[in-house]
Length: 124
Image 1 (cartoon, rainbow, N blue to C red):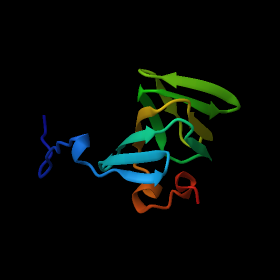
Image 2 (image 1 turned 135 degrees about the horizontal axis):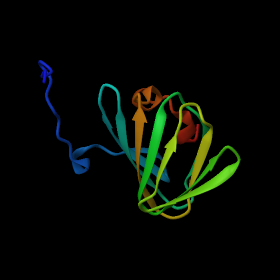
Image 3 (image 1 turned 135 degrees about the vertical axis):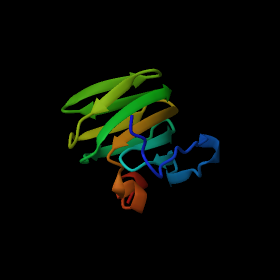
């Protein structure tokens, strides 16, 4: 087996990653690699992520709470332990039906999240 030269692993702790407040009902933390992004989202009850789409594939995993997604004209309810795969460019929105902790994985990483041009989350 050929080993990658000059590469090493990185260990993270969510508690050590700075939290970004996007609006009064939504905060996030990010871990980014070359081809994947992991985000920890805390959505307070009533938080709405407006309809949007992106080139990135998304996997959403609800750790605690309940999210209502709207995708292709249908509602999909995710509770603790549920996972939703959203293919590239599928329009979707989400509403927190209760205080929710969610892990989202994106491939490739979301450039708009990295450079702060994600106005749809910031209420702008």
